Structure formats: C-alpha cells, structure tokens
Length: 294
Ligand SMILES: *[C@@H]1O[C@H](CO)[C@@H](O)[C@H](O)[C@H]1NC(C)=O
Image (cartoon, rainbow, N blue to C red; front, side, top):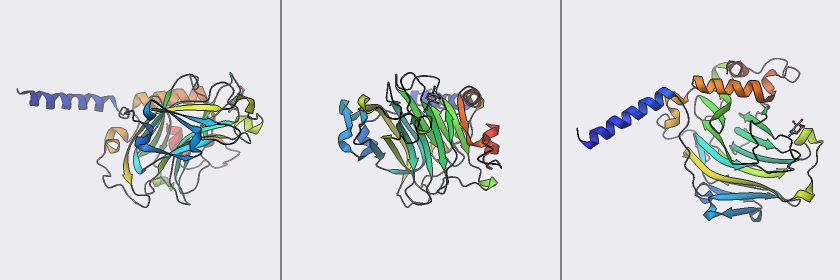
C-alpha cells in the first residue's frame, strides 16, 4: 500500500478511537492575546508578556479592567488558562463569559469570587437566555486556582452548553426547548473577561471588604483559544451550522466518564444549586429536570 493509503487508514483508526472514547473537546491551541482579543476598558491596567502570549489584569482602587473578543460567534469551543488573584483576594471578582449584545441577551458565565488568604475561592456559573438568568450554581474547586494556571472552557452547540474546568465537566445546560425553555441559538456572542471590585456582594455576601493595602490585585491569562462559528453581530444563524466538529454526535451529550466526573463535582464540591433552592423557586425551573439527570 502507498503511504497515502496508510495515512488515510491511520486517520480513520484515530477517528474511530476518539469517537469511541467520547467527547473531550479538541485540544485548544494557544495563540497570542491579539489574535482573538482587544482590551475593553482601562487599557493601562493590562500588562503583556512574551509578545502577548500571556497577560495580566490589574485591579487597584481606581479601576479594574477587561477585554473582549474581536469576533462574535454562534457556537463553538472557547477556552482560557487563568491564574487567579493570589493571597488576599476577598472582594475581587474575575469573570470569563460569553454574552450577546442586545437587550434580551444570552450569556454563559464563569465568575470567580475571591476570598481572604487561605480561604477557598468560589466558582459561580450562570446561564442567561433571552435576558433571563437566575440560574446560579456555585462550587468550590479541588485545587488552589491562584497557584497555577488552569483551563476554563465552554463548549456550546445546538444540544448543550458544557462548562469545563481542565477536562472535568462541572455543569451542563441541555437544550430544553421541548420543555419550553429558551436556549441560546440565534444571537451571536462575544467572549469577555474582566477583573473588578465587587465587595458589595462577592465575598460572604458583601461582609468581607477588599483590602486595598494589598493592591494591585493581579490575575494572569494565557491560551486565548477560540474555535467558533464567527458571525456578524446581527446574524441569526451560523453559515456552517451542523458541519463543524462541535456539532457532531459525540459532542451532543456527555459520555459515561464525563457524567461520572460531573457527579463527582456535584457530590463533593457543590455549595449552591438554583435547581434545588425551593425557597427561591417553589416550583422547580423546567430545565432542572435535565440538570437532575446529570
Ligand atoms: C470564603 O471563605 C469562607 C470561610 O471558609 C467560606 O464560607 C466562603 O464560602 C468562601 N468564599 C467566598 C467567596 O466567600
């Protein structure tokens, strides 16, 4: 057989193996900040290293800062390696999220709530559809997120939104259109990230105040990976819908191992889940039927 045939066979074999093993998203490719992102505000509070392959956001008592993707996207895989503010980070919030720009907006959020030295960060996630949020889940992490870089990513397709921490799915928001719940599908979103002071609510409900003598507070970023269907802000659909890797069968649901990992996070690290908050929601929000199955 010629080498071309071998190459084809190898590709088929690899494809079958990866298919059988299920649905870990493609490995992100690290690119410099400027490839996919631009600063949004307080430009002088962003520091660049190694040609922009790593950046820092600085928060002081004058201002926080943030950046956003150049493009807007309908579906895809978005990931960032982040090292959160070390030491006394109480009152600070570092966020990494997707959001559409209109009034009835869609949003997919990671928010890291800082804490006093030695106390654990909280990771809060939320999903807004058509302007409606109130879907908070909060967990502790199984590592110190301020010590080294960890990867936080979102896989978003027509079937599900999955939040990953490294390779562990920590949350799945299934498309529950059949249950009457809106799902983000027709409003392109941009990626945003920011570091700001939220000591009015973030740490123990606003009881812990930011200690400005510890400023500047610094969060570091690298990775800057975006693999999405780029669309104009007004687009209603993705031109290549159904044909991209994240649309394929193995990304339409979690596999067995991923569900087991999700369960592990659920059982060991959950602080709060809106789906089980009966004082706030006497009747369970419809999509929570799928959250419970998770
Ligand atoms: C901070 O630490 C306290 C005490 O361990 C804990 O109750 C709280 O959940 C932690 N996180 C935040 C963001 O307040």
